[in-house]
Length: 614
Image (tube, rainbow, N blue to C red; front, side):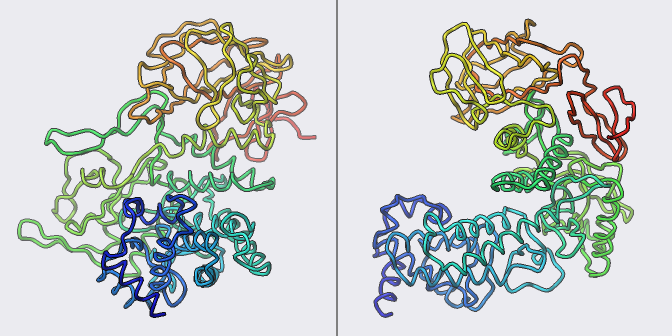
């Protein structure tokens, strides 16, 4: 024990000589494998593990945001003094420390690391709620606040579930770290956690949508608020990450497939099409953000206001909760102090007619009269005067826009890349879509005929060999004509091109598609900037004149990497596309070669005539 304490003091004093590689990384990156495999078996890694173990909370976890690999002596002493305090799961706290200990244990066999890991695991098992989810802290606050809700915010639940899966599968750094009974308990906890995600999926007037960042812990698991700027809503960011996780589950049940498809469909229908967020310097020479038009790039709100009867229920519950807790907020302006109840503030600007639009709110202690107000403007709009005569903001402030991700393209890669790959993996074609990607390809690099497992093939007149690219996409060269060969029983009614320009200049674009010529302004892929690919989506509609046999296309400018998704019907049939109803989105199915539309438990043919199910 004295030797361990001496090592800790040596590191804290700066005499331990941490390598530049470790000190240059964040603690999270060190925990997640940022160093070489050999390093985790080094004495330096063991010395840091000794600090991790020394500051472990009495109940088994750790607090968030501490850089445990480079603590000052005062920071270390503070953590020692707080050992009896709460453990945290937010911002990867506890799960990342456990991953670090597992790596060091695997490399060294150090039993202290394993025992500390097991204490952390016990904390996670104790912290699991009756509904199967997890909150930010153990023990709970028990103040009816957001920290005690089921928390999907910042991937809290997903991070815990990924750790549990790694443990019960008994692979990698976790092979042999627990016994069989513990692994079985971890799998049971994992299954309950997955069910919690499904239980929390928001149902809007009978239709499955997506998820909020926080949810109630009891049925019906309604969306709830977080901090003052995090209003009850559908969260584009958290929903994207939850979908990515759900699609990573092996052998999905029919129910899981239905839920994933429903969430993807809902998010796709509620995007802000052909827009992007742009960082720029404003007229005051300050960093700022704005929304600009950009063809093929789509946005989603971090908080999307819920509509229908579900929205009315969610927001009335929220307003009443604020009323019942009885807090007030005050703001002094021009010598006059204005005092509001939180319920007043929340109801003040809520507009049910703004359903399914991004909703914003401000979190700034200097203007507490803005807490919980619903705002619908991202960029600056003039102030207004409220019913008490106090000026208030009607849009986000610049600092809010720059400091927090209120709107982004998080869902686009999930919808356009991960979801098609998932459908290919499990042979899901009942919606009439066929995906031409590396996931569906059976070709080898260099093959001049690109062959896919759904009976589609692609040839070209330039002798270009098959080549893979990022995120399941395929490379297509400029100035080469490619021909998609369509199976004889199918006709293409729609095409979706999701991809990026593989070069930093110029933009790539579709010069010809199905014998129609286009310009660089029509279907283009923005050039790569600073090494970052600019993914975009382009939809081409062939419903009026379905394409049979062959579909040729040609790119110009530069090489583009694409996933091509083709919506097809049986040859000779018609496709009326998606049909909207007051009660939600219809579902298209193919039965015996006939396109049918299922809506509100009734079935219609392609002309909208109701038919009798057999």
